[in-house]
Length: 116
Length: 111
Image (tube, rainbow over all chains, first blue to last red; front, side, top):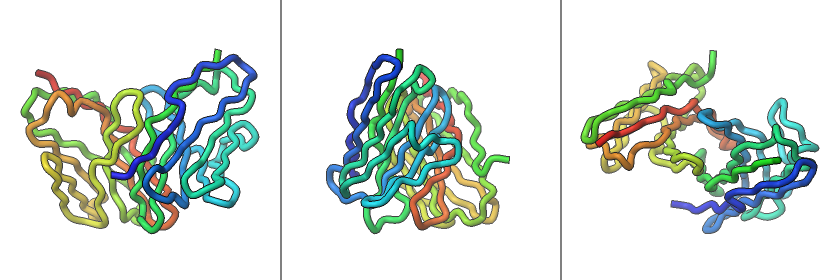
């Protein structure tokens, strides 16, 4: 299957700092990438959709200025959590759709963010 | 009412049992149906992918879609302890790849 690489897998930071998470499609070009947030024992909550070369589309209730998403190439999308606070602590997961393939998404391994 | 309903479990079965996992949905526009397996603190892994109604088999896994009843199932035969994970159903109406997920069912296969 296709491979999506997400880095880092775990990050611990101080309150007020910014954290960048990278999502790469290793063996295919991803026109669309998605960022999710997941709380313990809960399902995935879609945060935003990023399309290569255009602005991300954020879901209702997600702060655009808090969660900056960039999709600068067909293989890389980044999520930056700006001025992180303890309530931003969560498991963040990205996914990517192969160009020309409907709906079949592949997920990264996730990033556990802990804000102290 | 949620668009996708899935019993969160936990579901505990003995090794070798047949496991049945299910989701119901309300949006008749959904055409693509998927099952993902997620181990603790890992990203979901795509298990099965089905378009429209019908059955699909892959090894010990069988996915069924009944669009008339808005009901999908995942069967796991000869379940193993390594199958212990959370199983998420997901579906989409097409175009744009935006998926709607169920809450996930936690499965534990015991020795």
